[in-house]
Length: 433
Image (cartoon, rainbow, N blue to C red; front, side):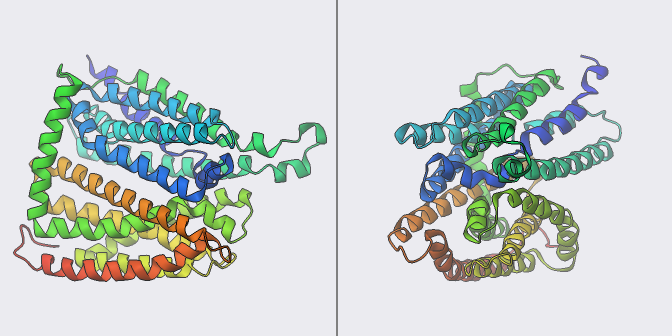
């Protein structure tokens, strides 16, 4: 296998990550499932299924990529994305049990696909770079990928919301070209299905950059599981890493759950559906500046101090969501989304500093496992809250749960920070910068 065979992999990686991640249904994700006939608590339970699938397969998939080949995992992830979107596109509206189980299968395929693609795409692109100046070359590839992914998200946000709501089109188009609401609501899913087919083609053209160790999926899964358990034990006994992860999972789980429900919240504050994508695009543009701000704050304050700032921002955002103000309700949504980016930067920086080189990747995978478990747990509790709140017809169930969520989250966060402070002041494995 000569160097020319690998030269196209970085470019294919950039294209793959844009088509795979910038999905046209994101701005309407929650209401897409609701308009098919599910309830909001059922949708939140689907998020639990998705998180549980990733929780079970994220780390083993990393070992499978290392043993069976990164290209193999990317092809599998792409075909799973095709199956995932086909199930959603064919799901019957108001289909009862059929609808529910097709949506469950959709979330399982989505979780498996995310787990298989996670890390395999970057590893394949990185190993395809020439050894000379590999780090600087990777910085350039990663920067290009991030910029094009941002562009992709802006396009997907606008395109997804505009195609989902046909009212603006029907007002200007002649009667013969009018589109029904039911047809329009399938368009974002069809667009993402086409993106999935593109991912199959791109991943099939990739070239494996390193010799593949011939091993069975079962053997690789067992080896990865053993390594994960051993690394998890080391994380638990490392006071600073454990504190960072546990504080982080509390903030991330609650805020990320809210982030998946933004389209339902926009309906609650009476925003037209065609605006959802423009709002998502605006949030994407604001998030462009988050890494610079996060970097400056992390250089000025300790990791624990930055986690405290992220926690306070999350509490403030959740509290400001509860009045459900028209228009102004967008501000706490934007605050919550930017808090996620700030939190992610802070945790990544801290774990890279604290983790030993030999177990760095597995530590990050353990962190991913814990975060998805936390997200799934908060989604489950939120779904139970919605089911209970639906008995009160005087207020929207979503607003009722949001009202209770803010003070309960503040109490949880206060407790976890008190515990984390004691952990943080135990003898350190490395110096906090």
